[in-house]
Length: 238
Image (cartoon, rainbow, N blue to C red):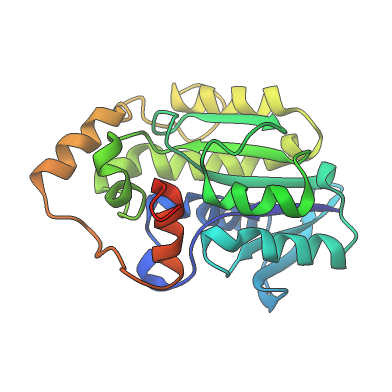
């Protein structure tokens, strides 16, 4: 059995955030493969089903991003799933919007979800990095905790559809093939839903302009789990 984990923050106010693209990816996999019946268990939402011949568990931790490892460890331990059979989907600032990279092991890149997971299950799990672009250091908070813009839908929706459609390749260990399918889709190839070929994916700099021209999309909390996460992300109070 494989465990597919999407990282994000629970609650309707965060549902459309860039930081929640991991949740979105797992939801897309569920839709594409007829997996339903989400249940609250082990500090997360879990659904069980099949992708091709492989039995899978889908997990969306409900612990807030900086404690994602609590839920992942509980589920992995309960179902006796090894790190080699765990795949984690999460947002990546250092990749352009719509870009996807897959790797096993490595560092956390400053991502609080991975910082929480690594000490609890080790490093030898598969990471699917989903690019959201970097807006510049001073805009990171409102970027990751802001909703995707309407213009982002031209690449985001096809990307999510293709992640769901080709998830079986990840399960089979064909990481390069999975990335190629998504890259072809982004260029309008045979890999999937067409991607942003008719409306190019915005570069990270476009989010800088967006942040300068409009008010922040969210109020940054001063206390509680989200405040703790942001303090860790920017090194405050350390």
